[in-house]
Amino acid sequence: MAQRSKLISDHQSVPTIIEQAGHSARFAFEEFFHGKIRNAHTRRAYRRAVLSFLEWCERRNRQLQQVSPADVGIYLDELPLCIASKKQVLAGLRHFFDGMVTRHAIALNPALSVRGERYRVIEGKTPEITIKQARTLLASIDTDTVVCLRDKAIISILVYTASRIGAVATLKVKDLYDVGDQYCLHFIDKGGKSREIPVRHDLQQLLRNYLRSTDLQLGDQSDRPLFLTTIRRTGILSNRAMSAGDMSRMIKRRMKACGLPSRLSPHSFRVAVITNLLCQGLPLEDIQNLAGHADPRTTRLYDRRQKSVTRNIVERISI
Image (cartoon, rainbow, N blue to C red; front, side, top):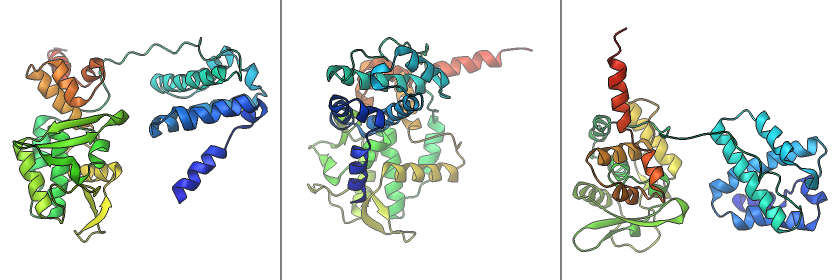
């Protein structure tokens, strides 16, 4: 009920500058945020960017039809954000004003001709967990309790499927199934992509042991979550699904307990897996498919092979 109330509140909070621009502007505003954007994260980011800019325009007594490319450029220059964040803001404004033009609320898109700063990403920012560190982490988790089995299974899925933590958090019992000669996991990944990934034998045994220690049954076609929270500190599983945040905090605790750097995150496993497979000479296309990337350039951002070369060069400096 609280979530529904929040959605209704968001739907009704139309800025004054939009109300003053007339029905077409209001229609385009609501269409953009509640009709065109289906991804919740994108909607939240674009809404924050657009509302902030519209408030900036209102403070300067701009009408919607008066907003110019100069306004957009000055606004971006004043933002205390990194280049990547500014580019996201600009993308949100361009899409938003495109809708305004389409619905004839304004004549031209003021953000269309505004250029963003040059920004080329060669390597992603996610820190890599090394093979040794990943093995240390897995070895540090016992399998004598259902909670330990659950935690080790979650981390093993991240390691052996290169999946995102959000996709693991949405797994249902029915998403683990036997296809005859092996088990498979079915993920609903980023962007609504449906992916099936085979389960390697050691992970398969771990998942079977986890299911045996619970009342969950392989082959259950209900929507019961695969990974459940615990009831406070009792060590007893509840009926509530672990969220991505729950899993991230669990992994952080496990990493801290075995002395791993605090900068590592659940996403670090994707970096390690992709780099490891590239080092083994596997085709980039195969690794791209495993990672679920639409563009091979995204997969290359996870490649940390060059780092070892850079360290070797630095170590050779004889000053």
